[in-house]
Image (cartoon, rainbow, N blue to C red; front, top):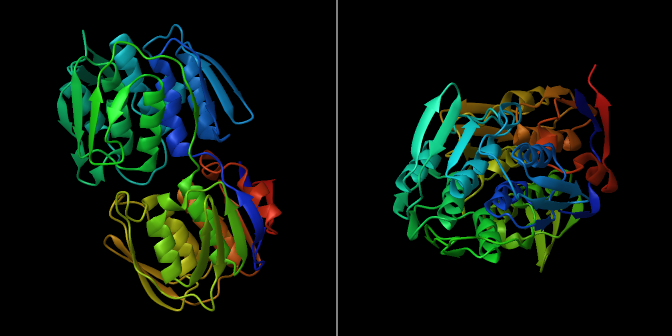
Length: 420
């Protein structure tokens, strides 16, 4: 396994270009299974997750070419069985179920894997499929879904932790080829859902309301091929913005969507960062001093859970007490013990982390537990004095394209090495 060696204490300065959104790319890649015709997707980030999804599409029978951020797919003949060894590695793979069910009227897919950050059941996906007329069975670690035909219906996808993003995507894709009208209530409002709807509509689907809690899908008989450019990754944008503030640097972030990050930018400003926006460009620098701030993660358009760990790393540097409350995933404080190894003073009380900030961080070996925890440890290592080794960065490679290269261009002393 590989790790990052970071020599901290250097401000990040310069320009960085944001890659396409991983969380938008995965369901859009799966949506290419809905048509026999060629599809071309641009701005696909080259990550382990997108490579896994490309392999899954191939295993289902699609012709796939992935090069230079462009993915060409033609799923002329496909099968309804997804390979276990691929699907188990990545939670996002569950989003092939909707397209398979819509196109073949059957799907067999193993229960998916991914980061260990708490329970993320797929019951709402299955509830949505059942509302469209599918029969669902779970046996031997596999989901078996089949139907003679999908019929439009009204389905409610709200859950204990809010709306389900992948569940909304899955049901929306299945409903695109269903007979009649489907209404998805308590739909996820994330920009990634909107991007999927734009792609499906470019294929001939009839979807309205994406970005709101009610999405209406008028089923069509057939979808055609299309081309699409993936939206910029809002979590990568948030990560570099937070890193700029944490290192007392100045970074201009290009190819981003600040309108997708209002909650993050608001908290960055509250914590003392100075922001300048111009179209798809955002410049972030630290103000005179960092300040404590309280953060609560919520479904979009609230503060995203995927940027919680990174903000915690920043707030360890801010004098005073910050309270971070996690309302989405109950096990998403696994980075706390590793931040403590760098000198952070953090206590967990139920769903909240009490951050007593202002103490200097010092480098140490740390272990990444999941994708966003990895990013938080990198930010902390960049701000800490001395050398930090972030182990198990395969988590980070799932969601950040060439992060070490981008950081080096900003002046960071970071190298990728084999773990000893």
